[in-house]
Amino acid sequence: MIPQITVLDAGGQYCHLIARRVRNLGVHAEVAPSETPASALAGRKGIIISGGPASVHDPDNPAIDAALLHSGIPVLGICYGHQLMAHLLGGRVQKGEQGEYGFAQLEISAGDSIFASLERRQQVWMSHFDVVIEPPEGFDVLGRTETCAIAAMASPARRLYTVQFHPEVAHTPGGNTILANFVFGVCGCRRDWDPAGQIRAIEDQIRAAAGSRNIFFFVSGGVDSTVAYTLCLRALGPDRVHGTYVDTGLMREGETEFVRRNFEALGASSFAVEDAAGEFLGALENATDPEEKRHVIGQLFVRVQERILESEHFLDGAWILGQGTIYPDTIESGGSAKADLIKTHHNRVAGIRKLIEQGRIVEPLASFYKDEVRAIGRELGIHPAMLERHPFPGPGLAIRCLCSSESAEPRRIEAGWILPVKSVGVQGDARTYRPVLALEKFPDSEEEAARLINRIAGVNRVIVAVHVWQPVSQLRCAPARLTRGRLDRLRRADAIVRRVSRESGFDAAIWQFPVVLIPFGTVEKPDSIVLRPIDSVDGMTARAVRMPGAVLESLAGELAQIPGIAAIFYDLTNKPPATIEWE
Ligand code: XMP
Image: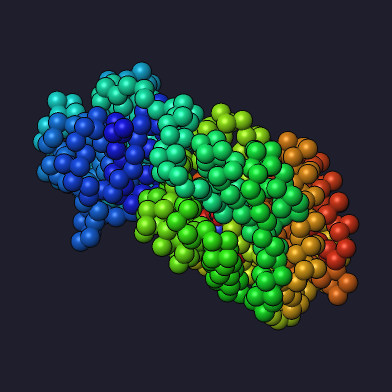
């Protein structure tokens, strides 16, 4: 089926979001590289050019095939797409002097076509540096903001439209209407996209790919591999689908049992758990640095998978490999950089690469986004507790159990304490690894936390003490490794947090709730716990979320009873400047 809309990816972080929004309107949309030739896009009803970090004046700026703009297909340019169309069609784009980031008020001067049925004043979300200062010939200016005189323009006769702001983000409330106006009003698309309605077709594809062969999976207990596995079970029957779950010993409390029960409930008859906990803990014995831990885990995962493939004879011709790969993973720009790294490791197992080369692989969810995978899962009757699970990182609790190779004391400054514990952040586009600022009480506002990070050089994260057995001045950082005892301590804290979060309904209000163990305490109580609930859309950016006071108080009280825990902290940092995980 040819998608009706193609989103050309100019490197924007919101490129997938555009396609998802269009699909949520019921219209089949795909993402393709920006330079895809016009001939390969024949039959599309409309093209959307995404935003991106480049300037049209950069020597290597993402290009599009200019023939597209003369092909008669309607085109909508967003942000960089707006500038690129202006540039290619003879308008003028100027390097911006100060840039414009955040909310702006759009004044609409032509309330038809893509702005049909919208009020003349609209809140929009801007994030750009360059500006279009002169529209191409034949273009009308459709809207302006205080700092951007050409915030939207169009050549209705040629069905070319552009907007400087981002209609795809939630911060542009009229954005969905704008996209719907383009997709239905300008392009004349019809509704053809309903992931849950495609289950039969997906099953047919699985049967065609498998032929007479069986399918094996490495399952993780996550949503994607579970839904993909279930589709294969339905397509081929339980006798022909095998799943192996690798227990790294770095998973949450009860995870292995949860996965086993869940797969049994789905009707899996051929399901195995590979206990590799000893191997993983052994390999991590001396790893204290975050990147080293990730590296060790990635490498070992590869070796364990390879061993299973060989010893179970899954490499012979009677088997093909099933994977829960979803749409953003199939596109170069998709996913978070770290998640990609781990996936690359998994995909690079030599045995798996060989299968890919031989075409012996089936990825039933490769065209779908996460929310669509959930919709398919619901239609398949998979338990909501499985489908609504928060994301959990591949390296597991290892990257939430911080280690240290030295002793150090906290340092008092006027705003609080600089802890001798470092965590990872992302500032500009670069990764940082810096100490943490700890406050003694919650600041008056969310902005205050952000201001503190900007003001206090050398920190990338701010936390607040919510329960301490002893004053922070008496706590120390001491050498600590990834031991079974510390992992158990963290596992216990994580289980308590999950229970309280679920029972209080808080978990429905957030996207993810990492619980982190830091080697900061006393001789008797060597560790502290950090709570890190966040809200996010895709993990690329995130907002720290405050728990209701009463829930937090009782949660902290319960956590403080765990043997070996000196203090409970609460992380107040958005991403950026901190990453969601501490490592
Ligand atoms: P950060 O810490 O980069 O995390 O802000 C963004 C999202 O990615 C998850 N994450 C990972 N997921 N393997 C994964 O499968 C990894 O190595 C990994 N590291 C981070 C993290 O939990 C968050 O949802």
